[in-house]
Image (cartoon, rainbow, N blue to C red; front, top):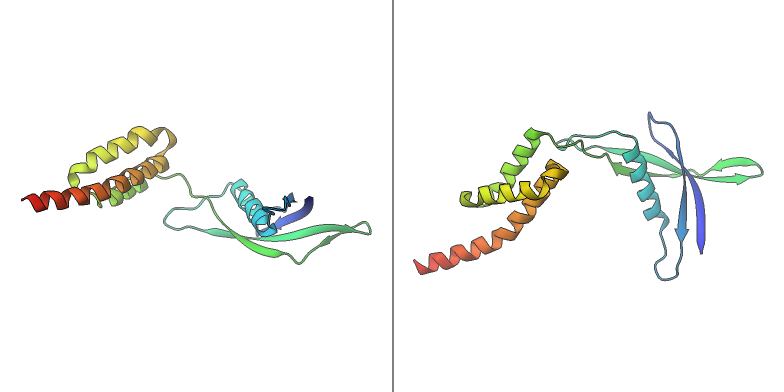
Length: 157
């Protein structure tokens, strides 16, 4: 069973945005209105084209009002207010260097070159954010084996 609801999204300083939300009830995994509304609000906020700095994240509150037509008039519900994270601006080189240094500080210095260059090789074509994500994965993968190796070598000496 499908149910189509009509909504208006209102946020300060922006034009009103209208969308339809379809709820599907397959019986086994029914959609929830809250989930679909949050998904639509997140999309709405991304579409505004605003960004925020990583060191100062911001969010936007959006009033979601259901729209119904009764006797030829549009009736608005009192609505519910949802919050969405404003997307981050692209990472700057300075932010990248700071983040990379912070991540690498958890590894012995002998591994910094390997981890850093491997992450760059894998992720640089997708931007600094992807390089950081790759670096985090590499460091996570190396941390435990390095600790175990350190214990083994320490026990031998």
